[in-house]
View 1 (cartoon, helix red, strand yellow):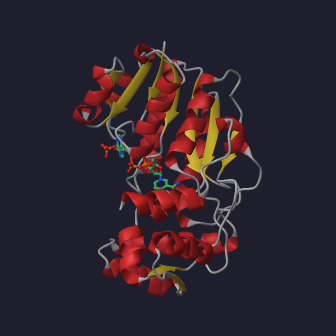
View 2: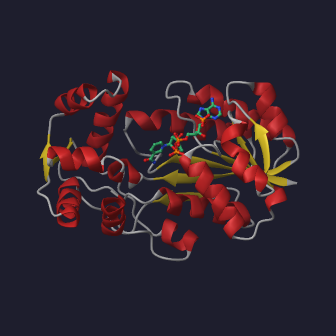
Length: 287
Ligand SMILES: NC(=O)c1ccc[n+]([C@@H]2O[C@H](COP(=O)([O-])OP(=O)(O)OC[C@H]3O[C@@H](n4cnc5c(N)ncnc54)[C@H](OP(=O)(O)O)[C@@H]3O)[C@@H](O)[C@H]2O)c1
C-alpha cells in the first residue's frame, strides 16, 4: 500500500516527495508519477517507486494508482483541460478504493471569482460527487511567482501588476509541499479543508519595496489596468490567453481572493511559513 504523488516531475511534486522522505516515509512506499520517468530517475535511485502517468491517458492513471492507499492529486498545468484530467484521476482513485485523495486546490475556492479558480472549483465538485474520502489543500499563491521574475523586475526597475492595494498571502512551494506531506502522513484527513497561505500577507507595493531594499536598486510597484498589464505580459512573450488569466488573478488579489486568514499552513508544517522578505533576500542572493 502506497502514497501516490501525481505531477511528481513538477516543482511542487518534487518538494512533496522530498518532504515525505524527510518525514521518514519509507521510499518504497512512495510512488512518484509523471509523464517523464527520466525526470524521476533520481527518486528511483533513492528507492522511490516511479510510474508513468499522463492525466489524459486513463489506462496510465489506473495503472499508476494500483495498490494506492493515499493519492496526492497535484492540479495539472494544462489550463482548459484540467477538469477532465482531474476527473480521470478521481475515477481511478475511486475504482482502486483509496483511503484518501488530497487535492491541491486554490485559496478561498468557495468564494473566489478568479478565472483561474474555475477548474479547481469544478474539481472540488467532482470530488464531492464521487463519494470518495478527500481532503482539500487550498493553496494560495507561490512566493516563487514573484521571486522567479526577479531578473526582469530588477532590469525594469518596476514590478507591474493590477492588484492595487490588495494583499496576497503567498508562501513558498516548499512550505505548501510540507503541508501536503503532513496531511498525507496524518490519519483522519477525510473531509478536511485547509486554506493555506503565508503568515503575513503583503501588497505588491510592499513586495517592490522589499526587492528594492534587498537588491539595493530602485524598484517601484506600477499598478496598471488589467488590459494594460495583460498586454505588457504578452509583450514579454506570455501567451495572450495566459496573460489575461494572470491579469485577472491580480484583480482577484485586489478583491482579497488570495488573502488567507487563519493559520492552517503554519499549523500543518509546525513552524512559521517562510516570510516574503526571507524569500526575496535569498532569491536576490542566488542571483
Ligand atoms: N499556487 C500558485 O501560485 C500556482 C502557480 C502555478 C501553478 N499552480 C498549480 O499548482 C500545480 C503545481 O505547481 P508546480 O509549481 O509544481 O507546477 P509545475 O512545475 O508546472 O508542475 C506541473 C506538474 O503537472 C504535471 N502535468 C501537467 N499536465 C499533466 C498531464 N497531462 N499528465 C500528468 N502530469 C501532468 C507536469 O508534468 P510534466 O513534468 O510532464 O510537464 C508537472 O509534474 C500546477 O500544475 C498548477 O495547477 C499553482
